[in-house]
Length: 127
Image 1: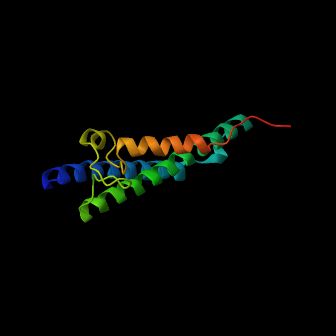
Image 2: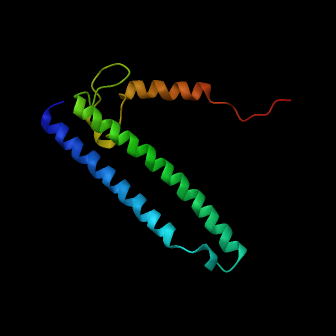
Image 3: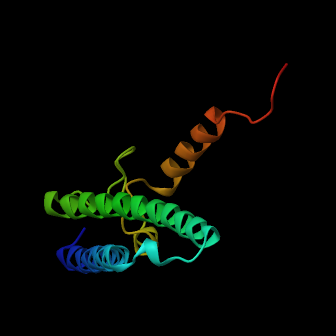
């Protein structure tokens, strides 16, 4: 990938990383300033627990996305950004614009998704 494009994608990835970090800090600040003892009844406590569970899931997804972004930035530093980890072909730039953390080309990603579908356990009960 040419240097100009690397700089462009580094900028996109850094902006995404900063937005996620800011979002996490903001949410942590909200959580530390809220007082669960002020909730008037059991229903409010239950709603707060559900919200905390959802926030925890969102936080986990943010952490995974930050890891993916950091890996993509490391690939830029190593000069291998935009190269499919599976087949070694260049990843289409349109794909990288949509998902700058992509590590697989479309064909290899589709193969990975097919593998997941094949090995996904069924929900049907037997016996």
